Image (cartoon, rainbow, N blue to C red; front, side, top):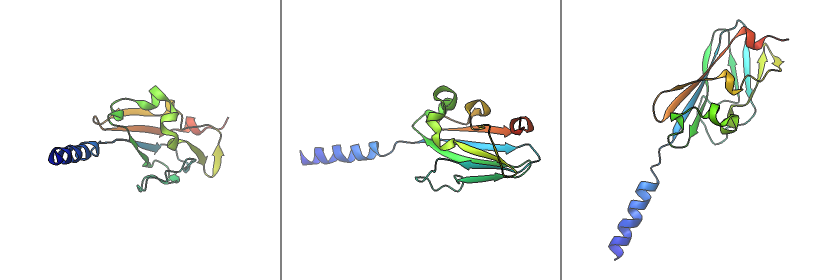
Length: 137
């Protein structure tokens, strides 16, 4: 009986500890001739990836990965940002600065991102910042 109990506990630990997390990669391209700074409002204190900085500076025509966010199993198989809104990615909210002047527009909104599924477990959201997006009115 002890042997069966031991095997049960061992199998439980092995199978419950192997949940695969999917992940979302967020990339931004600055297609303008301005220097753009993204200052993220919600810190990713639980994540120490190099890409997840509190501030990202994009020089003219530069592209960078600005966030990599873990998601529940199979989440990247669909477009969570469009389906669930920004509440699913609160670590994505940022203020935008153009040549050190704060832009009033909120570029982090879902309509500015395009979704590309890489696999069942990974997806990429991509934003291209254009002159129209940073135009002050």
